[in-house]
Length: 102
Picture 1: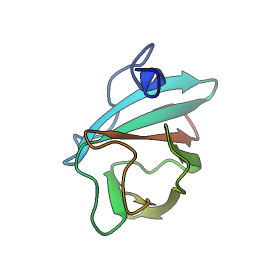
Picture 2: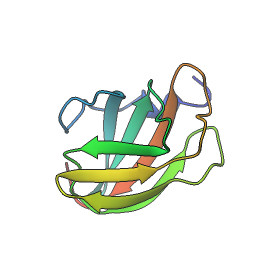
Picture 3: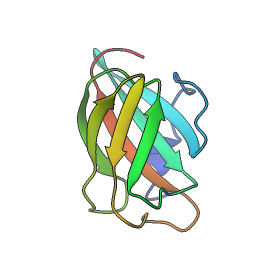
């Protein structure tokens, strides 16, 4: 909870379609939104599709880790390039700051 607490406390439910790899929570951040992606099935190829996320990602990071995460639009969603391994064997949380309210 010390590392991933911000992804739980004070959040709301997922504004996007259900994702095969895990769950999403969100927080309003002024005119923008912060999304927390709890990834239970880490991608072996280093590419994580966030289906339905069409808003511009302004910042992406790992909670509890310092690996690099980048985001690129991909048709009906966004592809995240993530490190080879997650920060936690059960669930790694990726924090995304996106433009607009979701």
